[in-house]
Amino acid sequence: MVIRMEELTKRYGAQTAVDRLSLEVREGEVFGFLGPNGAGKTTTMLMLLGLTEPTSGQVRVCGFDPARNPLKVKALIGYLPENVGFYDDMDARQNLRYIARLNGIPDRVSAARIAKLLEEVDLAKESDKKVGSYSKGMRQRLGIAEVLVKEPRVVFLDEPTVGLDPDGTSRMLDLIHSLSRDRKMTIFFSSHLLDQVQRISDRIGIMIKGKLVAAGPLAELAQRGLGGEAGESYSLEEIYMKYFKEG
Image (tube, rainbow, N blue to C red; front, top):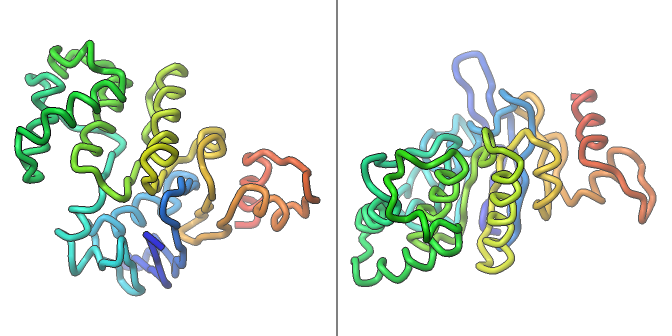
């Protein structure tokens, strides 16, 4: 397993943000991490990234403990936060080159990689424009390119489509799905938007009030949560609301 959590817990004083979370994410899959705001999704992701330490429990990303081996983990993963930061007075190519240098990638190696990435995220024709003039959707796509510069094994995405118009959302989801399909990357995708999680996820985890209440493929969740028969179809919204009401 690329990601493994065992009894992972995070407390802030008397408040438990993540409560004994045990979960595995497989190599090459898109895992949709679903829950309302305040469910513990972002806190879980911060522990996976090594940006905050668990109160108790264990976590491994690519075989390493993010809190004890943060540099090894960061070398193998990419992270796209909800609000991506760039140098707005630089163009797209300059931003990507700067990130490549920070990751120790020589210009002679990064040049071809950056050119290919700009094509993949459909920004090649806009690459000479200052990023400060980019729309939200363009910035998110550039964020994907930034994540991919160092060719990570695992990509973490935190609400990657928030604020995008329908066309921008569709393009972003297609791009995310292609990372798993074409590059065999593992995608850990956090969102509260049910239709988007259903569209691109191989498996889904549902967090309610800091607890993982369900995890698995959509059909399996339907069978467990709603008693669905083989071949019977349920929307993720129906499944989610069942677990949400119980939680």
